[in-house]
Length: 538
Image (cartoon, rainbow, N blue to C red; front, side, top):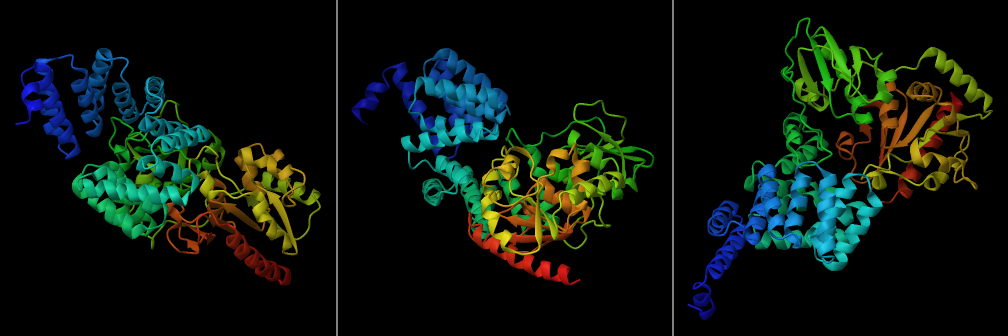
């Protein structure tokens, strides 16, 4: 036996150090329960050992045991308040608890104690990104990579926000090294799969996800990513079932499972009982799935539909919707409830039977007449085309799906067109900038709510939009809408198709190379010429 081991074994401190080294090796070998048993043995001898307490917090974070982990982290911090690692694992646990504010405070404390803690810079970036603070997040990822250029997580996160090919490759190589060193590392396989998904390498992504799930069958993020691949490929039967794993995600932005005394609806007839459709309140999703209200109304006394306040005027007249409720309002009595994204599974939706009984969002006649007068007073002639070039800037994927207005300038070369702005939010003022990137008529200042937006769209011949709620709105109206898609778009647009089975009047224009919009705009311009000739000659 080595002399240093012999010497260590003569002191309680030395014995504990050897045990904790063994616990660390057990963690690296993917045996957290063995590591936990060793740490507990140490703590029976020395209840205040900060290293053992910190490792217990680490183990709990890996096992997603949040409440227990936070107790260990608090004890570790109390035992060694000036050490960075206990605060770091507290941050990880607060992330798992869905408390980004507490996680941010913990990571900032880590960096106050150790400014060169690369993992804390990366994790802080993730927390900031989830809060929509994207520029701050990018700065954190850059700092993490300055400190540790090979850190696969930081490369993955930086690449996801910037499409930096070098960072993507560095992340892939980093995770491949991790999986070679530890073939039982389910988290590394899952992270590797998500990079492949972002690159459109779906076969490799699915193989990595299958490996992650085989190693850790309860890993919700792997199941969730797998479900999106299935839905993108049109495998709805398996995809909707797998998508139910979203309720177990440890992501603060994932929809929390709503708990009611009433049962979750499985599609059975409720008689006179009311059905609450709720959750997942993103505007586009509500517009896409409110179509199920008509089907559900045949199996219950009343459909209560929960939606964001801005959508209430639109959705309260949709066929099948009996009552609208808003988040935070007292709920009326109901017999059962169902999350919106569970409706396709309940109704057995496949690519062949997506519910469509014609347009289900309609313009108010009085508002449409008012909008018609406004459009006529603008004095433009020709085919009326509405443009949307940017989505919600708080969406972490908005950079990928949005396009600069100036990039649409080639559309002006098509004769016989008049362009109107439909753009909402922070990107809207670009339409009025001088010199204007493209000649636009902007009547959006007259819009009071989405009923006016619907009235406006009803007066247009075509809507050209990036992947935003306006595209969903036009599709639900049965309006002619062309959607410009980034290389790896949302699942609802599937793979390679030029049509969208959810919206019969929608045409898709896909990037062939990530970030390259020029050839997409050229194809749109070519089709605009054909449309102009067809309508002009009609």
